[in-house]
Image (tube, rainbow, N blue to C red; front, side, top):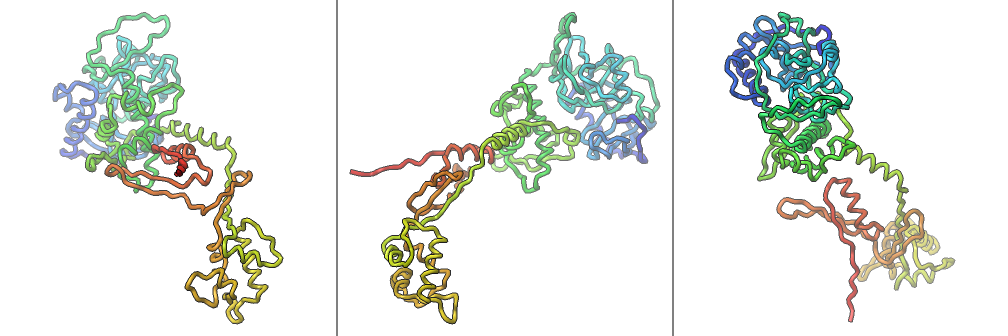
Length: 527
């Protein structure tokens, strides 16, 4: 982050009221998350001393998509804290602050690796050594702040954010472990008084849980020291990490949607956005139905309330239903998030693959009409016409036009009107209807009304299925059930050769909702 010189704008003294707010924020961030609260006030005060100054700066790199940063300096000009967004969502301590008091969990690494880190490289997984003598790593979530020290030392020489949850670090793993933000002797450290690292730092007992690390082959088990804090079971830690990672991923996608997306019910937010945003992994993790139950939260509402306190979203209770009002696109964890392949991405690819393998279904529907009662007599008297069982609408239009032209029934002054002869009057007019003329466009619909309706359906040019009766459209009706629950009922799809099982499965995937269906049963009543 500070490999080269950065552009610092003019600094200004921090107002006393702003300093008090900043001190409260820092104490809440540091002491509530990592260490015991019974820390002397003098040590706490040293974190945000009097005479603090504030300045804005821009680095030569925007590695995490951030260009506007805030720097807090002591009265002597030593950089103490900095943020990577203008809201100051997360205060990052510099070496000058980390050397005053142990306020971050520490991960150690060999001398060869620490030299690469001080040169500007990120800390890779192979360079991670267990930071405690009991062979364990502190429990740190993805993007959590961590200090990096040389092996056999607890003096921080770098600070960064975890590239993955610490429980995911494996002995034979590869890739980044920590994304380094600031180091000893970088350009940020250079603007201060440039002291040498201290011999020791006041140590505070960490209350965040730790987890064991597999010993490397040939290592000697020194015996695990008792862990003073209560450990959280590994399945819960893994489920918690998956939940939070999925939430951040979901926020990066949902902020691209329309503002009318909110408010959104917590159940919809969880099922339609968080669950599909779970990381796709070859390792079998908790299923969608077990994820929250296996976590330390146990309920979706408790998880959402916990991340609301972090400023990731805003909630409101509407008559007992928890709703999401908005998500925070400017939160530091969202800004620094790097997208990954999700469960939803995999399911979409698999669905498209299945669709590509299936042949395209072409359906042809034709309305047919059969001469019946008085219309049958009309067709029987037509000249040069072979009587058929069923006629299409274009065929009916041709027949009626031919009859009009043969009998010269077009109105002499109004070509759009047809003079009705006795045959057409008997055929097309309803009872008690007395008309001498009809518009040409009315003739075919009236002829259809006095014929028997049929229809044919053909799928993929196969032999059509011909049935008697009028083909009605599929009906979609919404009904409110159980107070506020809205259910959608779809009926009348069977004549189109669509099975209830197929329709339910397709709608379940497309709408991300629960579906159920029943097949029609033909009932016969008789003696």
